[in-house]
Length: 207
Image (tube, rainbow, N blue to C red; front, side, top):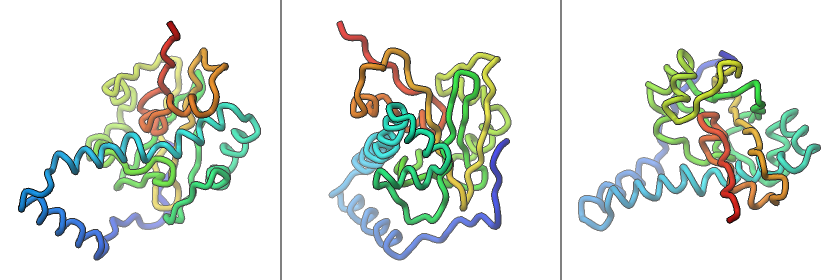
């Protein structure tokens, strides 16, 4: 497994605003003014759609600009900052490039360290004990459960995020996308492809 946890890795106590928000949420649900389904739908939107948009723009730029791609792989934090995406975490973001022969997968074995500036909220499964343990022990089996089956010739590398370093995957650009612009390419990039449990989407053929 690549990557390591440097120093102590803490689960920080929730802040007063976070605790207050939870209390208000519970009260609104209790009074019937808000449903748990509505909350779950909003969280899911930030996990899967709204949050990862920044990362999708980074990937699309790297797919279309070789010089930017080189800067991204050399210094992810700085290159991501070029597009205006910064975080208050203070952690370095390292970008890992998938190729036809190497597939990278990101995990955080001790808690749920995650590159918020580019991926938004971490999905629930990323924080689960099962994913955190099994992604390291049997990554190919985990990927298969996500619907991604890799050829045995492809090397799978698992990277362990920590409080100092967060990882993001640069997925392979889908074939047949040479004519697409950045905005359209960004629509092919999913949160899961930037974690490494999926490939980027294949564009829908034009009828």
